[in-house]
Image (tube, rainbow, N blue to C red; front, side, top):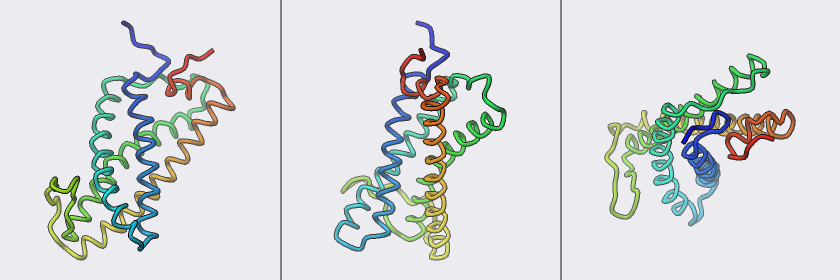
Length: 180
């Protein structure tokens, strides 16, 4: 079986859409956590931590899939600045998918809070307890999440531009449909 040069491999497509849903959910859960002091706050925290670790693990898997299966080439007529922006934003997304959960985990470790994946599964701290470090990680976690959201919006805008305006096969390469 030969690999298509016009589409991402199935594993990349599945990971892309699964993680897009998870990351978007995570961003809104994070906003809900900082905006709510109701009984839902604790419930949101119980979702946020394991979802963040799942995103971290899937980001590692996704990076391996990407390195083993290079993406299809961008259209040859795409201006160089847009090609650069596409590549830079993709790598920025990978970095943020890896760094944000680690910063969140370090923040909780510095604050002395456990990272519980379930009632009995607790992750070890990855940073020593420190109020100053907790404050720095907390701000970094929030700003990096904001950067992820902005990068996500730019990525979505670019995908729609390719799919609805240029109709050049870039969006269909990730959806899994063949270009006509």
